Amino acid sequence: MPGHHTEAAFETVIEVCPNMVKILARFSNDDEKEFQASYSRVSQWAKRHDKSVLVNYVAPEVDALEMELNLVDSWFKRIRGYKN
Image: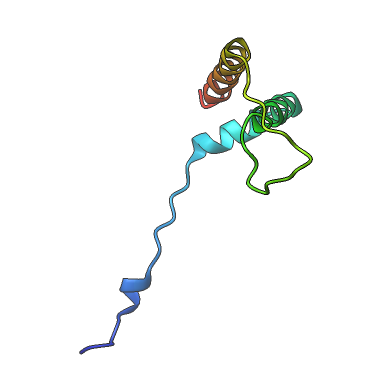
């Protein structure tokens, strides 16, 4: 019948991932501080969405990009290793 739905059609499947809990439990204040510091540095390199006249866009030097990429790569590998 059109417009008629069974309850089964609206059931939601929820999957619990215990590995994510392991990561959360091991995520430290230092991990969070490192993430926030990197985010702050990188956000200064991008044109701002709010078009603030107080903040000038300054493209980073290649060395700075490479250094940040290495920091983020190390951070990500460490965090990903928390699953094990």
